[in-house]
Image (cartoon, rainbow, N blue to C red; front, side):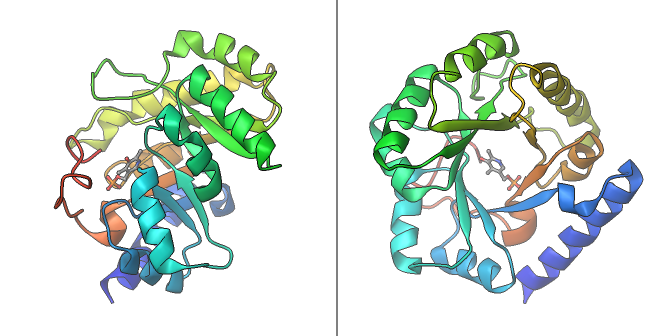
Length: 239
Ligand SMILES: *Cc1c(COP(=O)(O)O)cnc(C)c1O
């Protein structure tokens, strides 16, 4: 059981990073990023005790959720870009959107959540690097973004999310994590619910925990390498 071993190793590394940082483990959620892995991998993780999952594409998760049926207690968050014509579907399919990066999408999600009589937790994705491939809003736009979200009563801004530039060296991500935390801290007075920090992936999650992450998003280190077969599953690079 490779997955069980991976999960045990991951939990140990999270515990160690928390100890180094003087934090308690319960502050850090482990999200299993099951994108581009078959439904059966997700079921395996569920059976091993995982309850929080991240998927990048509306369509892909729709297909898998049909195969999986109801998994009691499981929560699935959207962590990839959302197109405005998929906001209604997103409300039906996801427990939260962790990759909000436009006010237009926010307004549509708000309207869809109202129709569904739900409060949707959202994380605002921040683009801290200049890479073209990355999504998110500019840090300088966050205050205006939060201000505009005041009127969207069906969305709960619950934190910030970022994807730093990929590097072999986990330490290269540290300044980005630190910056996300600084932004979050600076925004708390205006938006007290904005407590979450979704940061850290397979190669840099221990650094992210040291810098205050409340949710690490782990794909490869849990499930192994992603399959890149089929046009709709193969994204630009691995993100
Ligand atoms: C794919 C993905 C991850 C997981 O990446 P790994 O390096 O495989 O752990 C995390 N966050 C986002 C936004 C992703 O798209």
